[in-house]
Length: 323
Ligand SMILES: [Zn+2]
Image (cartoon, rainbow, N blue to C red):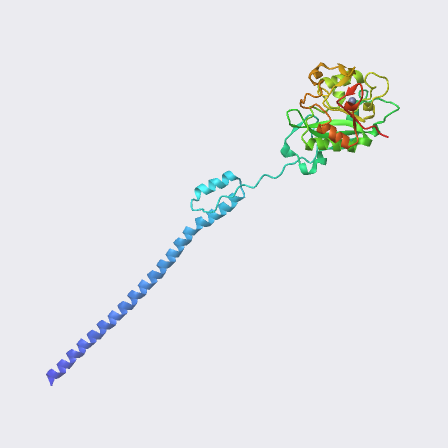
C-alpha cells in the first residue's frame, strides 16, 4: 500500500510538472507571437513613413514643375533636366503678347518703326488728322504759312501717317493738307502703306525753309521729300498754286520731275538729280505712270495727276481742288 501511494504521488508530481511545462510553453508562445505581431505592425508603420518621405520630394517636384510651366522656356528646360522621370512633352512658351503702338502721338516724323509695333487690323490708329496746334504753328508761321486772305489755319489739318521708305522700313511721316480733303488723303496713304508703296520721306516743307516758298520747294525736291501745303505761287507764274490751299501733293519728286516739253520732247527740268527719270518708260522704281499703284489709288479718290497735263507735265503732282 505504501508503495502504491508513493507511485501515485510521483505520477501526480510528474503530471503537475508536465502541466506546468505545457502552461509555460503556451504562455511563451503567446507572448512571443504577440511581440512578433507588434514588431511587424511597427515595421509596417515605419515602412509607410518611409514611403511618405519618398513621396514628399515628388510633390515638391510637381509644384516646381507647375511654377516652371508658367515661366520661360529656359526655366522649363532646366526643370526637365533635374526631373528625368518627366515624360510629358515640354510645353512651348506662350507667344509674347502683341506690343502694338496705340497711335503715333509719341512718335516723331522720321522715326523708324518695327512692323511688330503696327496693328495692321487697325491702321486708322496710325493715319490721323488734327487741327493746327500751337506747336505746329510755331514751325510753319512766317514760312509755309503766313497771314493771307485765301486760307486760314482752321481750314488746314496736320496729318501723321506711316509710309515705307526707300530702304523699305516703316517710317513716320507728316503733312499739312486742306481740311476738306484730309480724309481722302488719309485713305490714299493708308492704301499706299497697305501695299508697301515706297516714299523716301514725308516732312513739312518748312524743314527745308530757304527764305521763300519757291526756293523752299526747290530745296525739298532736292532731297526728294514728299509734301503738300506751301503758301506759294504756281511754278513759273503769279497765281496761287493748289499747294497754297493744301490741295496738291508732290510724291517722290526726284523720280517724278516737273518737265517742260518742246515739239513733244523733254527740253527743261530744274533738278539734275532727275536726269535718269526724264524717260518715263524706263521702268525704274518709284517712277509714276498710268500703270503705277500711286496713280491708281489717287485717281480712285478723285485726284487728278500732273502727268496728264499737256505741257508742262508735273509727274510728282496730284491735286483735288476744294469747292
Ligand atoms: Zn505739286
